[in-house]
Length: 303
Image (cartoon, rainbow, N blue to C red; front, side, top):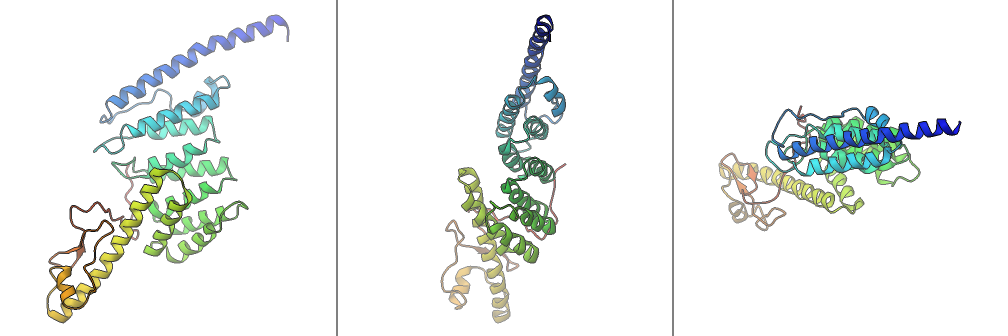
C-alpha cells in the first residue's frame, strides 16, 4: 500500500471514531433516561444489534463489551428490588455485550441471574437466561461452570428435569469439572423436584462460590427449604393429632403437651411455627425466612 493510501485509510478510520463515540454517548443518555424513569414500560435501546455495534467498534470490541456489561449491571441495580420495575433493556444490553466479547464469562453467569430472578429481584425471564447461558457454552465449551448454571436454570426455574440432568452430565465430561456435576446429573434424573435434590444443588452453589451475594442467596434458599421440610412434617403430625383428638392442633404447644413433639419447633430464623384452622403449619408473618416455590408446580415466566 502506498503512503498516500495508508494516509487515506488512517483518516477514514479516524473519521469514524467521532461517530462511534457519538453513538455511545447517545446510548448512554438513552439508558440514563431510562434509569431515571424505570417505571416506564415503553423503553427503547438506541442500538439493539450486537453485530451492528461490532461493525462500528473499529476493533474496540472488548472495550465496548465491558461498557455494555457495566451498563447492564447499573441498569439492573437501579431497578432490582423496586415494585413494578421493568427490565426491558436488560436482555439487549447483555446480548450486545456477549456478542461483542463472546468470552465475557461474567456477563453470561451473572446476566443469567439478573434475567432469571423473579420480580422484583430480577426480570423473571429464565427462558432468556437459558438462551444466554447456552450461547456462553457454545462460545466457551471448556468452561464447565456454564453447564452447571444451565443445569440449575432448567432445574430451579424451568422445572425441566431431563434437560437439567443432561446439562449437568455434559458439564461433568469436562476433565476439569468437579465430581459433583455427575452426581447432580444422576440425582436430578432420579429425583427431580425433591427437597433433597434442591438442598444439594443450593449447597453446592453456596460452597463453590466466593461471591457474597450469591452465597447469601444460597443460604436464604437453604433456610427456606428447611422451613418447607419442617412444615411438611408438622402437617403430617397435625393429621395424626386430629385422628387422635378429633380436631387439629391450634399450636405447636398443644402437640408438645400431647407428647407428639419433644420441643417447640422453630424456623431457621428462630420463630415458632403456627397452625391455621385447616391444620396447615406456616411461618409467623414477622419471620424473615422465605419458602421457595413448589418445584413440582408449573413455572411462571414473565413476558
